[in-house]
Each structure stands twice: as structure tokens, then as C-alpha cells.
Length: 543
Image 1 (cartoon, rainbow, N blue to C red):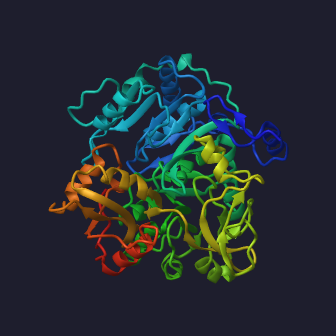
Image 2 (cartoon, rainbow, N blue to C red):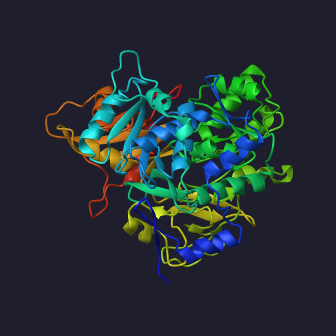
Image 3 (spheres, one colour):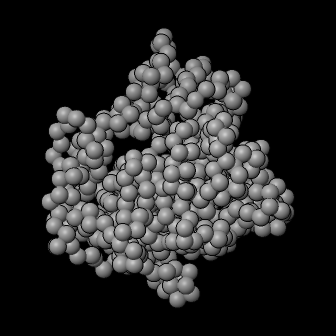
């Protein structure tokens, strides 16, 4: 059987047309675009609020701003399948940009890399980082990138194009939505693979909608439910919340940042009934709710994952939050939420100690030769299902990651738990999971090796009080060189465009690394050493 199908974006997707037709016919895919869903919602409830934002603004179902922006983007010459990059916080403008892309059949890319983007939306100066300067550098060295657009420019910024100008000049009377196939690519999101090299993950309207449906079905969610979301839209979880207000009955309360005070107030203001976030979010919420004596009665579920989740933290959540079940989940950008949570009271221990029950995925646990392991043994857990990604932008990487039976191999290690559950026990990937986001150690090392005084660098995860894991750089310097300071090294790493959150937070200088007989650095030993020696920060690093 011929594997793969061409897409208007120019990339090749994994499933062939027969498989796509089967998924639609069987009802696994709804075969509707997010824009089609938004139109239906607007006709039924034009003044209804789809998304609340933490700056006090709202996005209604009937939103002319998305049409205005779509008209302006079309007048720039953008066509179906073109890529738009939007490196923005969880702002109202990001939700509008996403809707406009859905209407035109454009591919949205939240983190600009080698995506072939034609337009890049960035904020003005923010968190002491000059995003417009980064955009100008990218424009010069990335030929397809023809325009960069500043959203909420800083005072005194002089830019060629601003978001507000694009919206103002778009005539909604000239708007016309494209005919878009829901099985075509609509999202390009970068993550890190086995080698730590960032890979472009491709999803469609159908795969993302199926992922939302999986969660709604297993958690018994529906009309009246509101998701509080603080995960960034550059993460598959945060991005999905831009969509769920339109492709599901669940609305969204979107936060641009998470501190220890604002989530409590935002939950009480919006009546949010559930939230999805990494371990640090749950730890902060429980701690602040306990100190304020806030039981948050509207909150029924806290779905937690993407970093180690201590069982005692789940138990603390149940003690502090009046009506809330705290639940562990597991998934990745390629296979969102392979497992769903145990909700029943009688499954409290399973919810705290296992990584959930499998829903709407086929999952195996296999050894290095792809043979099924016996119960209790550790193995990799390849998965396949209707919400699985379409492939990578690099077809060779796709072919390596998906086997002949259609299973995606994610290199995470698990053990089978009680019936219907599993436990993630480790990972083969050379990654740092910081606040639920995968950071590539190799990407960091590649930049550090350009520093004139660094002979060799090894980047590993270190413990971080709030974010789960932080970034530690072990360095061997050239002879007679003085060790750089942390801030100096952070500036060096960020200058070529690496995000500040990826920069080292700790430096260790050594004469040599522990190595195998073949000379390979034993990063497990470096991780153990920094885990023993690091002083835990009192509050999360600000970057």
C-alpha cells in the first residue's frame, strides 16, 4: 500500500487517502474545520463569549476582527497551505490570528524555525527581550519570510507593519472563506525528537478535534464547562485551548502568565471548572489556595502531566480543593493525551500513582526488538490512534518514527500497571522538561559550542522547585580561560534567537566529563551530580 499523501502545504502526510476516508466514514474524524465550527457557534449564539483573557478582554463567537485580519492576509498574497508564524503569549490577538488562518486554510506555526513562514507575528519588547530585532534577523536570513508584524508594540517602536494596522485596513465586506479540507495540515508545532533536534510536528483540524473529543468523552465535559489554561500556545496543550471553544462545548479562560495569585482570582471570576497544566501549576495553585483558605468550589478537575507528578501532590490537591479531582495524564505533541485520567473516588490511588488509563489509542509496550514485554517489565510504548499527528516536516524523520503498523515510537519508557493503566518510568530522549515544555539539550549545546572560550559543553536537566526541571550547562573550557557568568552565558545563548527559557540557569566547570569506553558523555552521571548539589530556587526563574 502506497504510504503517504501530498498536502497543499507541500509536506507529505503519513496517512494515505483510503485511511483518511475510513476515519471519516467511521466517525473517528468529524471532518469539519475550526472555522466551520466557529461559524456555527456564531450563528447560534453571536454574543456568546468563547474565550476570556486575564487582561479583562473577551472573544465572542461572532468576531469581525478575524474576518478583517483574514482579508488583509489574503491581500498580502497568502494562499492556502502557506505558513504563518505567530510567536505570541496567550493574548486575544493570538486567538484572532488562529481563526483567520483557519478561515484561509493557512498553516499556523507558534514558534518560528525553518518552517518556510511568509509572515511572522511577534510582540514588542517583552521580558527584556527584543522580539522585533529577532524578527528582523530572521527576515534577512529566511527568504520566504516577507513580512513581520508587531503585536502590542512598545512605545517608540517603529515597525513596517503592526497588527492593529492590518486589522483596520481589512474590509469585512470583502471576506470570503476558503474551501479547506479538514484532513489537510493546519498546525506546525516544533518539538524535540530522540536526538534532541527540533522537529516540525504536523496536525490537521481532524486530528486536533479528535483529541478534544477524547478528553470531553472521558471526563464527561459539556455545556457550562470552562477550562482555565495557562500553558503557552506554543505548547500543544495551550494551543488546543484556542480551538476547543469552537470545536467543543467547552469554553476557555486563557492566562498569559501564571503567578501564585492571579489563577485563584481568575478561577473565581470566570467560574472555571477544569484546568490542564504541568506539575508546577498544580503545586502553585494548591499552595496559594491553602494559604488563602480558598477551596475554589467551581474547579472540578486539575489534569496534570508533562513532568513528574509526585503522588503526594495529587493527595494535597484533594485535601485543599473542595470539589476537585487531581488527575495525571500522559501524551506528547505527536500523540496528544494517549491516556486519560482516573476520576472515580475509588480510583484515587491509581490516579496518584499511575499514568492513567488508555483511551482511543492502541498502545504497546515493547523491548528494543519491538517484541511485547511481559507484565511488569519496562519498555517503550508506541501508540497509534485517530488524534495522532500527520507526520514531521522531514519525511525521513516520519518514516523513522512510525512503523509499518502505523505506531508512533516516542522513546518514552513505561511499565504496565493495573488493568488499563501504565506508569511512565523514564525517557530515552535527551530532553529537559521545564514547566511541561520539552527543551532540546542538543540545541543548547550547539549554541554553546560557538562560544570562543568553551571547549566542550554538555547540557542536562537539574531540579527546579517550581518548573520541575531547569537547564544546567556542564562546561570544559579552553586552557587558561576564565569561567563565564550565568548572565553572560544566557545573553550569548539568546543572541542568535534561542528562547530565554532555554538558556542555562546553572554552570558547572569541569576538567573532563564522565565517559563511556567509547568516549560518549555519561549524562546520567552529570544529572545525578547536579541533583545532589544544586540549591533549589525559592521561586521560579523569570524567563
